[in-house]
Image 1 (cartoon, rainbow, N blue to C red):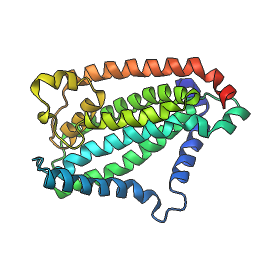
Image 2: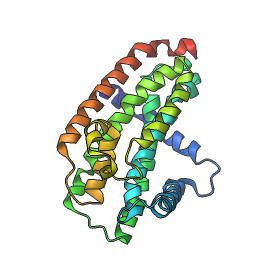
Image 3: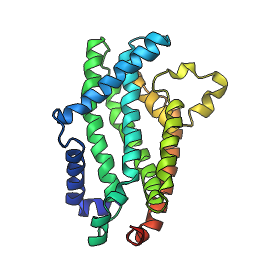
Image 4: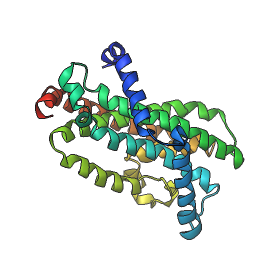
Length: 255
């Protein structure tokens, strides 16, 4: 896979640039929406969950951004890539290239958005007096784990959705439920102790909590939980990759 990506790196770069251009086409504010979207959602979450539902968390705007930004990266990466093969049918029929480049290009475009949105998070951290600690150096590791999870799941859902369009609808419901079992707007401490071990088998729960630990709380993540999450992510990646490789030769037939 790494060799294919290097060989076709120009195609991958062009797909990422094209995806970003299409997303902000005819938009007056353009790439600024990468900051405005999470800002608006953060305000809504703060009003609803902190003020109305009285979830008591200190520095809640920073708290919710630490969960909202990774979740947006995860959900948009999966949902946008699920139909990427279908959207590039003409390209697939015309020339040969590793088909995984198409969903990967979508995911990397979402990664660019995510990295831009971190500017908003860092700004709120400064505004709320959050201390930047050396543990922030672990941020690339957490991002890499999340990226691997997104790629693995995307390869799985993209390949299936190419043959069965119902998969796209199922994915929407899956993400809707997944959102509520991930600590985006509430702290992990609200999960009952007897359910916590099972709850933290959700890799996104571990990832979101790890973002908060290194950014908001200035502490090391739970490496035991990260190791288990990394194993689950590796399994998800291998399954997604094997399913994609098994089905990709038939993509041109069904498009």
